[in-house]
Image: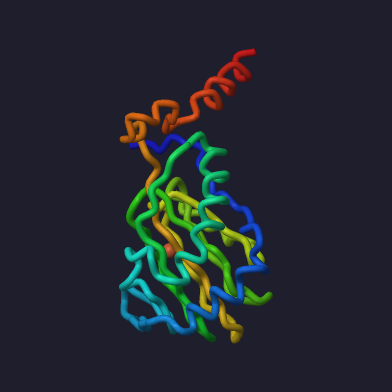
Amino acid sequence: MKKIRFDDCICHTKIKDHSKIRDSILYEIFKSKSDSLNVTDAYYSDSISRLDWSLCEDLTRKWVSMFIPYFVDEITRVMGSMAYNEVELFQMWYQQYLEGGQHGWHIHGHHYTGVYYLEYPKGCSKTEVCSPFNFNKKQIDVEEGDIIVFPAHFIHRGLPNSNLRKTIISFNFDVMYTDSEDEDDTDRQCLNLKLIDKKKRNFFS
Ligand SMILES: [Fe+2]
């Protein structure tokens, strides 16, 4: 068996109006129902002081509905840059880390996942992503208000946190592979083939 190196990417951008929405979302998260996760054994090393993973499929939760318009705005741009015109969001949840809190190596369901750094004072721990090609590890340099998006099968982890509270929002979504089911909406295509064809012309010219 050989592995053929092939490009993929981690998209990194910012949520517009982060400073406008930050405190109100944090307040709703503070008021919301939460669990905690503490599992440390030979396989798992998870210590998350607050999270609402158990509710992640309910996209009508108050903090989620406050965030979704900003999320959709940026995700549309991010996925459009990779020629994907349509996505479907399945799960969204928050995770809050205190000193030493961490999330060990894991993957997600669905096609894409990512992290929005809602509360991320300088010095908080980073997200580390592992290459499936050679297991090289990359720590992603981000600042508060940033959002990263990457394929859900990339193995990644949240490194042990400093003494500064870190709150992230995570999400899982699919890219659509057939045209919209809405028959009246015949102009919508799931892939932006113009981007792909343009690159081919550049390559051969
Ligand atoms: Fe994750």
